[in-house]
Length: 354
Image (cartoon, rainbow, N blue to C red; front, side):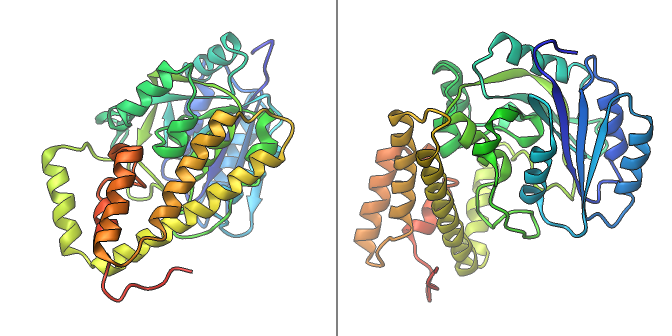
């Protein structure tokens, strides 16, 4: 174990019986074991809790099992896990993935060799539900422009975290000392564990920590990132010409007004949450939040403010949209480039978003 850092492996688990034991076995197979394992069963209705309790009885390290009486969602569950964890470094595990044996060791190396960093994330091998067939690597689907930008600018990930995040929670590890910034995360429970279109827990953590500390990016895959029907999130599909054409076709064939209103809601939710982030960063005194990073955050907030108040008059609307594209770049626009179409073409009988 590390002489410098204590390690907490952390996990939120919900109805994970199908894949959980594989992940727990991979935790046991690490070349460096954690000092503790903190896991929360988020109101599962299957045998998840039984599996965790059986593991606890034979694990060679302390296991702390938290229990939610009902399903509370990922962000709420992580809030409690982060509070309960005692380690200096918190390494996140998804219940349905499988770690490579050197994951903890490689993460620990980064923190020990770069003591100023706040978090680390890595590449991962994307697999199907069997965890046997490779579908590529996470960094193949991440924005190469922003990934390279983070690596070339003293590992300053803040711009990427704000505009186009590509750090998956399953690959994330961060320092416990940033808990005052990270929690409480917004707790909005939907079928996907977060406010629709709101800031997900992994993005929230990377925004808050990268606002005050650098990070390290590990190119080597350190886990198998399993894709299946019950994923809360997942790696996207590669943007080939064919997939882009299919997405545009889908755009015109689906219920435009319904999808448009979902997008409007998402913009409003993210705007409100980013404004909350700014207020928290400016009010805290424990960590240094630079003027340069404040300007980056303001740029994103101003961008979303423009997009949430577009005029109905077509020429004015188009002028503002194209101005935003030229100002911040199409690549960093709102959520996806397809959403530019929603901003250019208002839905009929548009509902007001409160």
